[in-house]
Length: 91
Image (cartoon, rainbow, N blue to C red; front, side, top):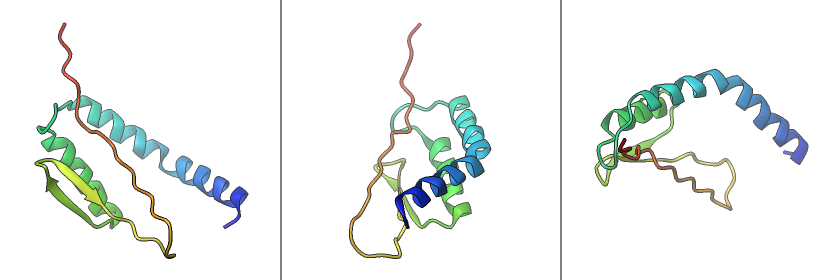
């Protein structure tokens, strides 16, 4: 895929899933869970991965999740990592 085509494809996907992404972020921010206690967060993510047909392993180090998306081509690999725990705020 040409560089310009790829850029436009990514933009199209971002627009297509923007409302869903915003709703998911709002939901996750409504249920903050601190480290190793992200049970609702992990369940939400696992449900989304199932919905998208992405294979995953859960329960890694208690609440961790590893999803795998296979490429049609062999070669380079991309790994993404994200924290999902909330930080405790003392007021």
